[in-house]
Amino acid sequence: MRGAKISTVFVFLLMSFLLFLPFIHAETPKVYVIPIEAEVERGLQSFIERGIEEAEDAGADAIIFDIDTPGGFVQAADGIARLMGDTKLETIAFVNPDALSAGAFLALNSDEIYMHPSGRMGAAQVIDQAGNAAGAKANSAWLSSMKIAAESAGRNPQYALAMADASIAVPDLQTGDGKLLTLSASEAERVKYSEGTVSSIEELLALKNYENAELVSVNETLSEKLARFLTNPVVVPILLSIAFLGMILELFTPGLGIPGIIGLSSLMLFFYGHLVAGLAGYETVVLLIIGFALLATEFFVPGGIIGFLGLSAILGSILLAGEDFQTTALAILIALLVATVGMVILLKFFGKRLHLFNRIILMDATDTESGYVSNVNRLELIGQTAVTMTALRPSGTIVLNDERIDAVSEGRFVGPGKNVKIIKVEGSRIVVREIDLEGEE
Image 1 (cartoon, rainbow, N blue to C red):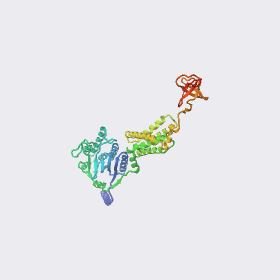
Image 2 (image 1 turned 60 degrees about the vertical axis):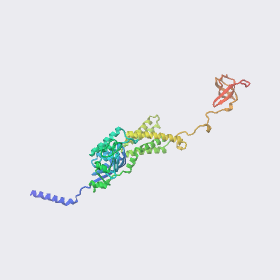
Image 3 (image 1 turned 180 degrees about the vertical axis):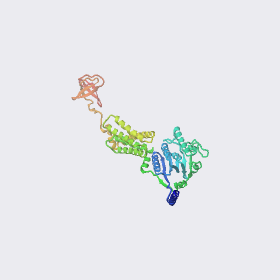
Image 4 (image 1 turned 45 degrees about the horizontal axis):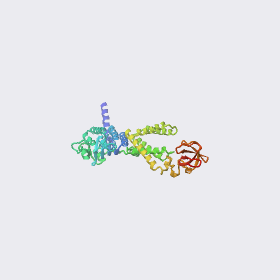
């Protein structure tokens, strides 16, 4: 009897499951699309980090990185590659159409690579800020990174090395002897650096059996776009140059004027961009405020030490907020040089025309053309007769019409009470010659 009841319950549960089976649907897969566009820099890294976090929080099945970049900076590429490697979600690179330099490195760090028919991937040699090939140390580290990225996805590392070193040749492609490897879509698919060639993300989704997936596009916010611009290594020295020049001018002008406002605005933009990009923390802003507070204190407590500490705090906050110490230090040096040269040019060539500089330096000149003389040239005294009040050895004092005058003889000693004739006047120098009572020499 007990067995019959169990059988009845089992049959009931089975029938219920079959009854509701049509209404049970598998959860719709979710795919996130994150664009990697323009230059690879730290502002882009912050955006990629946000996009990956959103995909993970939403329980996405895969992330497609829509890549179209000419490359960028090694440190930023390393940071983005770590983010791509740390996520447990499937990562797919869609080269659409270019993944050059650092972009090729990012594509290699994805689980799979698909390329647009006109796509290109490669030309990944490291260059310095002057546009020349990087030194052996930096190049060796980059080659190692390229090799590891290729091997982690089971790809032949020789092609990745040929992308980064023009001296490395591969047997089936024209590389080496000064030519970096850049793979076309067909070449990449042939050497298994691409899983396929597709014309669109929709075609890629169909190829990956994600045609019914919910597609979520992650777009940059306005603040992220602004941060990417403000943290660009080319823009940073410009911002700092404007900031330093404005503050230098403000130091010589009373009150908060236009130079000070422009300088502070440039400095605020610098810190805003680096805060949004995740390069700087609020401790750098606190250090900046302390620096300005110390500089303000210097006006009331002179001595120089407090002002030096304030300036050091400001420069330290900028260094801490920068992408790295070396790059930021170079930007500060460039900014100081530009600010100094700019200050000299403004003072030398435009100082008299700009009312602003009348409060900085003295523009009036006490020249002869303006009627200024250092001493009264008393030419009317020449030829007049005076009496020595003191002995002239050869200088002394003479008396002319009850006026005492400093004078010198021609070189001979003249005793007191002697008659002398003024023969020469040269500014404050009055030369006399002794004469007899009859007025003869």
